[in-house]
Length: 134
Image (cartoon, rainbow, N blue to C red):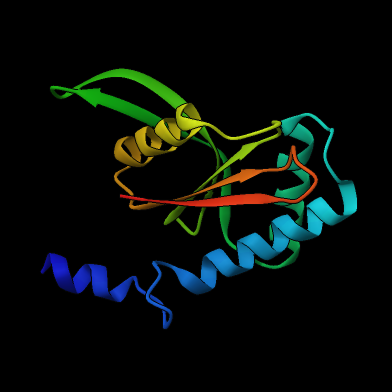
């Protein structure tokens, strides 16, 4: 059953949620082309949410996720965006992404019970996007 579920999530190119992530990345590229680097992360988050809404991509902004340990809630955090209930979009506006940012995305995936995140960095001259897969 698990293999079937994974196969259903793969696009024609063999990537999870390929069409959905292609559309989200397109929105991020449009925002980056218009604004360029240099703004705080919140500016890019609002602009990307506006762009995804315009493109009719379903998403939740600032989605609250609870972290459980041994059946008890031990913390919570907010996702920058959860697209179509399937893909976490974690935004940054930094000179460079590092292992800490990757670890953060992996932790978010585990806590949310999801398998794919897009780590999007608006802080460089060219938009940087990393697919993080569990």
